[in-house]
Length: 181
Image (cartoon, rainbow, N blue to C red; front, top):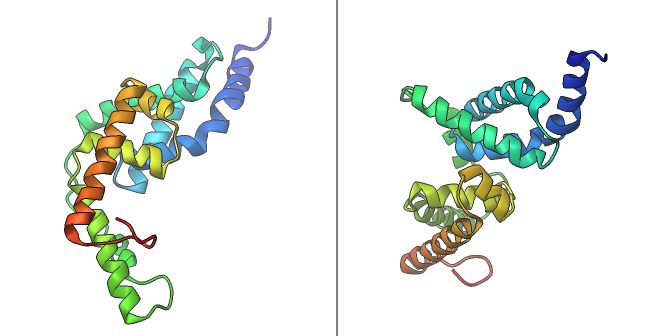
């Protein structure tokens, strides 16, 4: 009989390791800090390793995202409030990445602030959908799996979130680089 540990390691390498990058992107959208995202991915990988022997081999990404969702729920229950955010992260965001004219800096900053304000004004569930689909590049079905909601719910939340952001940008009088809100 073959070594069960070797079989478990082969399955882990085949089904789990190719999805680590996606897991990290999703974890970044679910958590506020990179360290938290890395911890969440590590917890997900440990849970997946323990359970890979029971995995049927179908839909590994969905399986892993479900594990991640459950791990994040457990982590939130145990988490204490953060006392301090990393001030260096905020400082880096304020420093311009390229040489720009003062006018461009003001317009870019104004637009970024308006988009950030519009995004922050969204309900948390809509923020999560926007992050998963537009930032992490997940499909509607994958985002639905992460959030444990139907695909149609993801689509409707995303539609409402886009509309709210667009309306807030219009109300703020901010236009994008393409000339529209």
